[in-house]
Amino acid sequence: MADVLELGFVLLSLLAFLVVARSVFGWVARAEGYSLTIETTVKDNPAVGIRFGLFLLASAIPFLNLLQPSGAGFREDLNVVGFYGLVSILLLVITREVNDKLILFSFDNDAEVIGNKNAAIAVVEGASYLGTAFIVSGAFSNVESGIGAAFIWFGAGLGVLAILDNIYGLAVPGMQEALASQDLACALSLGGFLVSGGMALGAAISGESYGWAQDAIDVAYFLALWFLVIIVVHFVMNRLFLPGTSVRKELLADRNLAAGVIEAVLFITITLFYIRVRG
Image 1 (cartoon, rainbow, N blue to C red):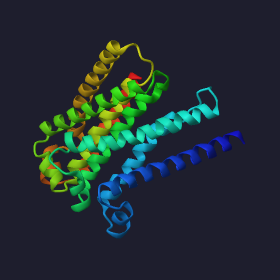
Image 2: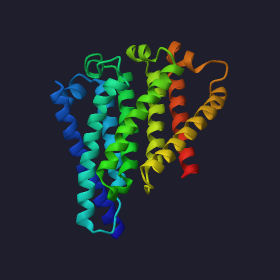
Image 3: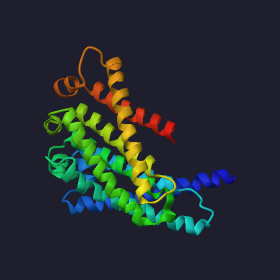
Image 4: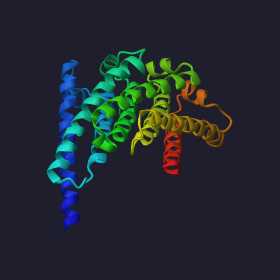
């Protein structure tokens, strides 16, 4: 009976939190000059649906991570979850603005998602939400250390995502043009890379702190080794999964969705394996 009640509490808490996340998203949408309801139900805009859906998923990740009894009492746990949950939603809103300037710097995100119904831009934007959610989740894993540290790691995380985007752009020249032409294959591949980077950084910064200097060294080493592993394994696996062709050709010339999905899955799977082994 106790398990059923706990499950019911978790589900009701998550539902209430998602309602709050939806309200915040709706307020931001109205401030930007569009209606979430009209875009998704009247205009059938898939890009807005992707943007909203991945925003909700990203909102839930830190919330569910926080939904763990601390032993301090039910009321205290609820206050912690509510406060940090709302903060995580606000950080995701900030992420969208930073994303517009640092990752999708060639575009006006709203013009692409609302005006052009560009699903590729929405996928990359949503992937940055998810990557950031894992970073925030890792930073909030030890809430006793205060919210200041979480803000610092949040800023560092946005920087890491921007760096990963630029690395991807060097590896796949023509990425920005592909996204402008609504190349979903390229968007899925880049999105998977950004999500995996957020997962790696979130895992690196979670847990006990040993001081800023030591933490920075540990995180840098964790990410450097992750990047090396993902390059080596990704190179080998692409020869196995996409023999006789190149990733660039499949993503940019052929706009091959299958290749984009395979790329994204490989990035995330390798990262999950790495986190498991290193954890």
